[in-house]
Amino acid sequence: MADSIITKQALAASLKDLMREVPFEKINVAQICERCGMNRKSFYYHFRDKFDLVNWIFDTEFIALATQDSASESAVVRWAFVEQVCQYFYNNRHFYRKAFQITGQNSFSEHFTEYIGLTLRDRLSHILGDDPADAFAIDFYTDAILCAIKRWLLDKHCMPPEEFVSRIKRLVESGARIIYQGLESEKEGRDSPPQSSPQTP
Image (tube, rainbow, N blue to C red; front, side):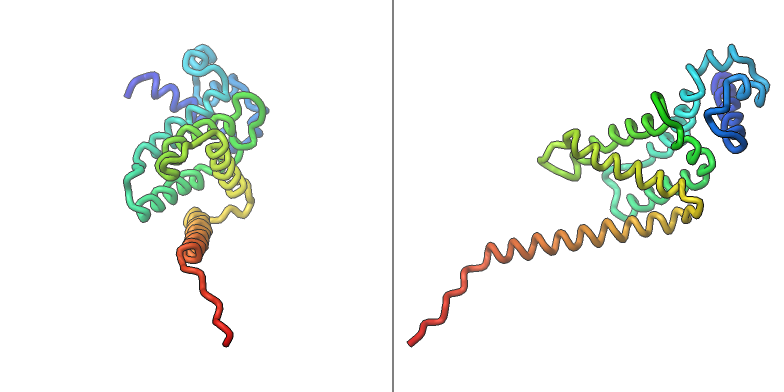
């Protein structure tokens, strides 16, 4: 393993430990370096600031997990992947609870939103077919995903990922089923010939 990766991972582990103990806004680069026996020069050689380090942790851990996904898989495999992703967030919930509460420019929420938006652009084009995945559609789904995950992780009684995904799956599938049935019913109504009124003698 390259020395630079070892250094980055040591700094990441240090920040994760500190975020379990103190609020993120009270953590500084000196504390991160001291915790893992590094110097500030080493930190700034790899990262711009502590916000950059938080985003690097997400990029290397979550995005590496997400590369296993495939848009061509079956629905069963897709839901299994969603559960795997949620399992990752749940296992690292102490870190992401703090990360999602970071506000301002270069915040993690901003970084996460950008990543989800780019990912959804391709997915929505596949789902919507001929309809373009415009900014409104991307923002709508991105906000829904971001808010759902934040609300889930920030809840002090954070439910297990299996239950979280099961509830989402039930809502999505039942909602889609009802909408489909409604559209089919409307189509049948349009296609049916009008009923003639009975002739009176």
